[in-house]
Amino acid sequence: MKEPLRITLLRHAVLLAFVAISLYPVLNVISISLRPGDRLRSTDLSIIPPDWTFASYVKLFTEQPFLTWLGNSLVVSSVVTLTGVALASTAGYAFSRFQFIGRKATMLAILTTQMFPATMLLLPLYVLIARLGLVDTWLGLMVFYTATALPFCVWQMKGFYDTIPASLEEAARIDGCSRAQAFWHVVLPLATPGLVITALFSFMTAWSEYIVAAQVMQNESMFTLPLGIKGFQASLSSQWGLYAAASILVSLPVVAVFLALSKYLVNGLTVGSVKE
Amino acid sequence: MATVTLRDLHKRYPQGFHAVRGVSLDVRDGEFLVLVGPSGCGKSTTLRMVAGLEEVTDGEIRIGDRLVNDVAPGDRDIAMVFQNYALYPHLSVRENMAFGLRMRGTARAEIDRRVADAAAALSIEHLLARRPRELSGGQRQRVALGRAIVREPAVFLFDEPLSNLDAKLRVQMRAELARLHRRLGTTVIYVTHDQVEAMTLGDRIVLMNHGVIQQVDEPLAIYRRPANRFVASFIGSPTMNFFAGSIDDGRFRVADGMAGLSLDAEGGPLRPAPAVLGVRPEDFVVDGGAVPFTTAEVEVAEHLGHETLAHVSVGGASHVVRVPGDRAVSPGDRLSLGVRPGGAHLFAADDEGRRLN
Image 1: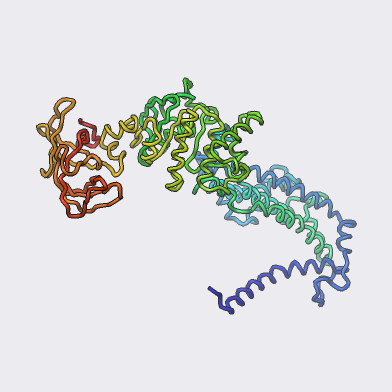
Image 2: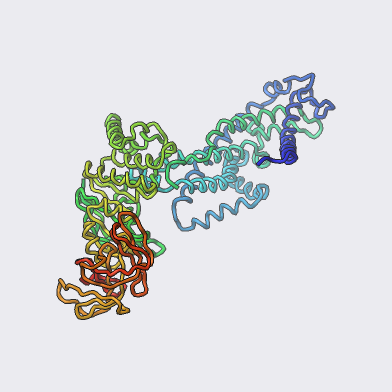
C-alpha cells in the first residue's frame, strides 16, 4: 500500500527535526574548536569559520597535560571494562544456569540498586572508598565505576545467556568438555554481542564520568579526561577553544570503539544451532 | 561397543516430581534399543541419566562393567544426538564434527580421516565448510549424526532425533539410521514418542509410562502380546478397540449384551471376572470365517485405497474395523464381525489393566 504524501512529508519532517537536534550541538562544538581565541558566541553561522585554525588542538597537546589525562582515562576505563566483562560474564552465567539458594533475592537486590540515581549513591560510595583509603587513587575510581556499571551488565548478560539453548552446552559436555570448557568454547563465543554491550557500557561509564571523579581525585596529574577538561572552564575566563577541542578528541575513541564493535552487535548469532 | 545396565534407577526432582521409578534394564552389546512412551513418561530423563546430563537419585548405571553414576558425560564414551540438533553455530560443519575429538586431543591427521569418513558415509562432504545456519533441517540432522559417529563411541544415545523433520525426510532418515546401525554395530539407545520409529528401528522396545517400564520385548512380540491395556493402546495404529464386559463360563460378554465371544482358554480356564476385551482393527474379520463376535452398523467409511477403515458402533461406543480395500463398504451397511484366532486380548478391568489370556 502506498503511503499518502502528507504522511511521508510529516514522517520526514519529524526525523529531520531530530537529526537537527542531535547534530546541532556537535557541529557547534566543532565550530568553536576551530575558531581562533576563545570566541564562544559568534554571529557567523558557518560551521567552519572563515578564519579557522587548529590552534586550540595544538595548544591542547603542547601547553596542557592533555596526553596525561588521556592516558589516565585509558588506564581507568580499560581496567573497568576488563573487570566488568570478566565479572558480568561469569555472574550472569551463574544466574542464568544454576539454581542456588538466594538466587532470586540476589537478582532482585541487584535490580534494586538500579532504582537509585547515581548521585544518591555518591555519598555512601564515597564513604566506602574513604574508609578503604582509596581516595585520590585510580583504584578508588575503578571500584566505584565497576560497582555502578556491574548490575546492569550482570542482568544484561543473564538475559543473553538465557537465549542460548542449554542443549549446546550439553552437547559440548558429551563431546568431552568440562562445565568450564563448555562455557569457554561454546557459550562465550555465542555471547559475543552481550559481551560487546557489556564492554561498551563499562567503558562509557568510566570514560565520560565526571561527578564521582571530581570527589575522589585531587591530584591533577592523576585526573581523568572529564576532570581535566572541566578545568578549562574557569569562573572568569573559560578557555572555550580548548574545551571544545578536547571534547571532540574525547569523543573520538568512543566513536571508534562503537564502529569497531558494531559488527558483533548483530542479532541471531545462534541461528541454525537448534531447531526452535 | 558395550552393554548398558540400569539397576533400579530413580529420578526425583527437587520439587518432588518422581520422573523415573525403579527402571531396570539390560541393553545388549550392539543392540538397537528403543525407549518409547507418551510425553512425560520418563524416557528422556532415563536417557539423560545414561548420558550423565541428569543426576541419578537412586540406582546404578553401568556402561560395560564400569559404574558410571558419577562419571562426567565426556568420560562415559557415549555420543548423543539431540532433538534440536544442538550444533555449535559459531563453528563450521567440519569443526562441529571435529570438536569432540579435538577436546580429547586426538591427532590432527586422525581427526581429518574420521571426519572425512563420516562425511562420506552421510553424504555431507560438500557441506563441511558451511555454518549450521546455512543448512536445511535434514542436513543439520546429518551433521549431528556425523558429530556422533566420528567419536566412535561405545554407545549412541538418540533423543527424538527425527521429530523435527518433515514426514518424508523422517522416513528417509529412519532407513538411514537403520543402515548406519547395521554398518557400525554400535549399541544404541533411542528415545522416541513415535511408535512407527520404535517398531521399525528397534531390536527391542521398552515401553514406559509414568516413569515405570510397562513392557520390554521385540517389536512384534509387543504388538502381538501386549502385557497390559496401556501397551495395547499405545502400539498399533489405528489404536486397538476396547470393549468393557465380563468373562463368564468361557465366554466374554460385552456389557450391553449385544456382543459376545467364546474364548479358547490356552493357559487354563479364565476365572469369571469383569474384564476388557481388546481387538485390533486388523484382527476383525468381516463376513465370517472366524470366531463370531457381533454385527454392527457402519457409521463412517474411510477409503484409503488398499484398505478401508470402517467406524462402527458397538455397545454405544465407536470402534474401528480395518476392511480390505476391495471389499465395498458404505455408511449404513451392517457388518457381521468375527475375531481372528489369537486376535482377542483380554485385560483386567482395573486401572492396571494386566493381560489375562
